[in-house]
Length: 85
Image (cartoon, rainbow, N blue to C red; front, top):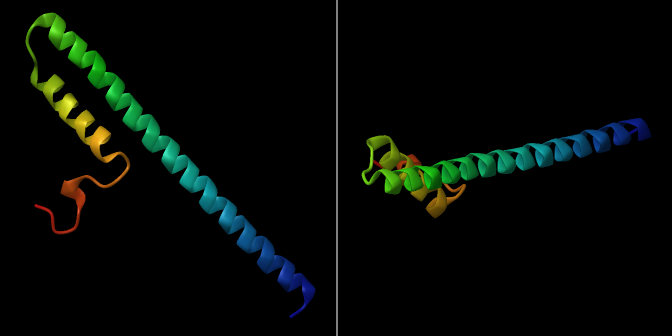
């Protein structure tokens, strides 16, 4: 195999590895940002509910979602597992 083909294959492998690393990093950053936003919103919803003295359905749902985010993090939620009902 000519040296230029070896170089091309090496650069191709390097660019694929770098691309995979960047996609994984962005994915992790996006999941963290989404999770942090949900938890932040849930904290303010909880503070608002305690201030009003009663809960609303949207606040309760937000707290439930925040509970799932905190409990499972970036892992799949139970309802998304294959075969889950």
